[in-house]
Length: 253
Image (cartoon, rainbow, N blue to C red; front, side, top):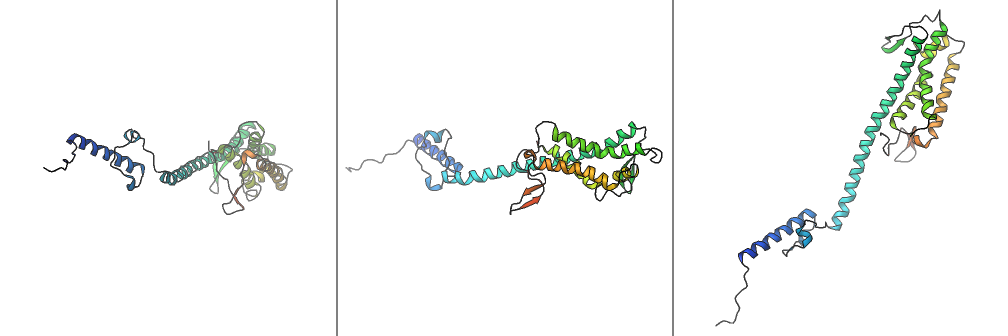
């Protein structure tokens, strides 16, 4: 008789269990990103059976920074979008405050304001005869820039949480409107500065210096206030400065 022992064979149930365990281990390995050489047909550990397989450290180091960078880019993109929307809303609010100032002033001095167009430009007319009532016309014409200047002054003086995109838009609208009316817009047919000079003893230059000086003072205060960092210029990626605003946080809130 042969002295060789009969080969040990697993019962069918044991073989099925072994195959199931090996398949489970392979599935976890593939899901975790481990190299195929790490696959073993041995019985998976309790951690593997519970689904808590640890990913390959090298793979994790490669994926984590990429995912983090993508998340940062996505977050910054959303912050910029919010910033632009709120900034534009603030700028429009400043312009509406300017025009509202004209309307209220017209009614206050007995005028009849109306809306129209001058050379395709939207215009509010006072309904006041400036030849008969020059002082009333002066009040009407000066109301717009005065309201914007007071609005900007209030933002810079009244204690509050500063630096939001909305109030930046308001400040930019006030300074921008003054800049327009004291430069290229001062000689227009319906220019506020032109009408103020026509109905008072002040010249266009004097009026421009008054409102321009107020706006310049506001700009200096904004520049030195850390809550409005990078309001007029922003660091360039290649060194130096570039005109614009830098969005690095939740400024759009």
